[in-house]
Image (tube, rainbow, N blue to C red; front, side):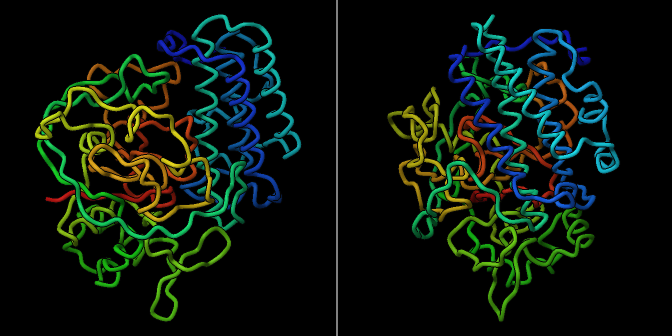
Length: 444
């Protein structure tokens, strides 16, 4: 049976080659299995926390979603696991109840994952019926990519060993800091996705014009070294630096520094998964809540950019005279050249962040670095629908969360390159500091 969103149609999208769809479905599932490899039964359930799911439940949910939006949505088939809706539908199974379900064993869950994958791939033995098929294959893969990133930060939250990424490489060499601002001219800018995009999520639709005032924005995200100066200046003890909501949150959780930082004889170290390592001074500060980012900005005499300003700085370009914005925006911060590892730190390539001065080939037209990858960036903006919003078939993707979250942009080191674009909108509540999130600032 289809969900309540049965009347919603898939948006127009680029028709992707069948072999490409096969590759991304297989690749996403390989990564999912790698994230749970080596964990015992207790670790697969873990403690009952607001910020994580039981990993055993979450991998079953990934399979349920794939089955639901391919076999069941496109072919009106019965679920491969009869009780799947009662176990894995995330909008019907309350978060706290997920630890109490009679879940299949790990072997049973892996069998379900494999059975769904094989059935979904079997559909691709025949030519795609329509671009709608292509859309849903991409949707279920991107959904799995999102959960794979969540598996990575859940393992960090729980202090498990670092996950294994399929594309791990040696960490990048030290590149240093990248201080200073760039000037962005004012003008007219279209915020959001356009119909010619290869794939869009509903909250990106559709591009709509805004007038933009000139502004100055940091060339790079705030670094550990910069944030440590705020911490060492008693930034967490000064109520005047925090909003009322932020101070209430800081008091409730007794935050005195970023969540994984560890004081060591007058210096700062940081827990990375199951190890404590030296704090890299020129890497972006990460695992900070929106409240912490806002307090830092007040301390530094700065502010967070709006998501409009962030997107302008990322893919906008100056007109020929340099005094106004050009009418068209770029595909990527650096232009139309394909995304690769010289321009953006994605796909878990180094197993963590790199220095903020790394990857100059990825600079935007205005000179902002790492607008894609390395660390998610909080913006000042509330997560609200764009004008004329309408939900897509995955109706629960955006609608339940409008007005309760803040927008993050840009992706992080663990985000899949095939998923993130400069118009992609991530969203979390302002108290979340388990995600791979940092921020860059604007001048007042």
